[in-house]
Image 1: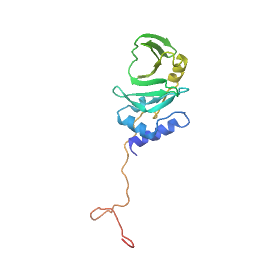
Image 2: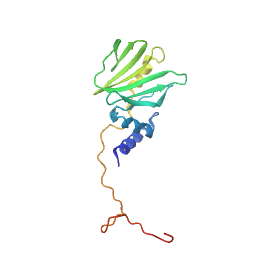
Image 3: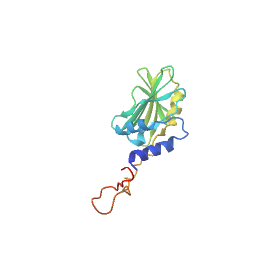
Image 4: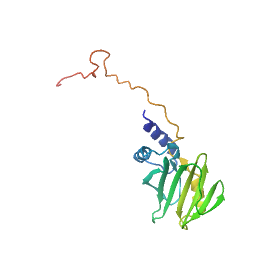
Length: 174
């Protein structure tokens, strides 16, 4: 089984019953852009849906996507490695940070080795909603542990002698 299929299977198992998910082609596209599987995270944001066409790479191996509401409001999700570097006014809030800068506000959940940011225009999404969504973020593709390489494929139609061409017996009319 290829690594992509194993990751897709892990994604399906992880996402079952969780509310939001990336579809297979979107996940393939994101992984093909070089996004680290462990940085592909999703959130539940009441009143917003993931705009799958927005999902993609951020920086070297990070993940980003946009959640949209029916009335056109947007919340940007960004997940990247390394420490969070605050711009603007920052304050500690729970296990993360709340920041305001240039008409935008964000909640940042700091995790082991990476950080997740939810960013929106001020006044569009309540701070507590951003915090709850960021703190509840979950991986979309398992734990990101690489799968073992696939074993050899047993075809069953190759002879053990002769020119090694597949058996292709002819029948009536052939």
